[in-house]
Image 1 (cartoon, rainbow, N blue to C red):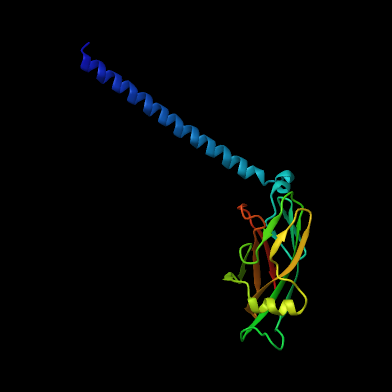
Image 2: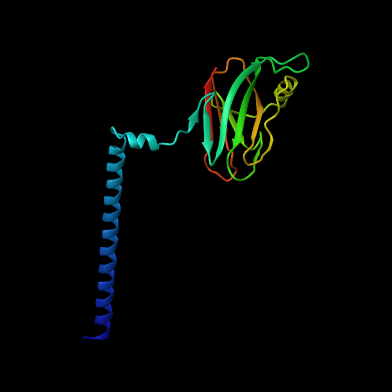
Length: 189
């Protein structure tokens, strides 16, 4: 056999091997996806264990959420029309949200009312309201900012200015800056 025929034969063999491996890879991937779909379809049917292992992601007023040893509770919410010195914009009210944070982890944590909290009122993004914080401080409530040592607690207010006719509020809390999971508190007026 000539040298060129040998090269052509080797190339054909190599191409056939590559094509066969590619086809086997596609078939294996397809079978793996089919198995996942079967597992997903059967996982929720009467399987109490699968329901228990689902991690709760939304919490209501009074419920305690925990993440990496840090417990967060939205204790209460209060609407306020302000005081003689500070009032919300026309048609709005201050919504004062009181949180308690318990640090049962082994390290100190930093809580920032700006960086740790993200809020939505009726699906619109809103920011903390400084005037609302002044009202809460006049009532003897602290702003929710600072560090919490391991084994210690923090209590304070996050204030928002919302329309007087608001319907649903959603507050996402990130107690650990490095975590990708937020704890979400959802409540209605």
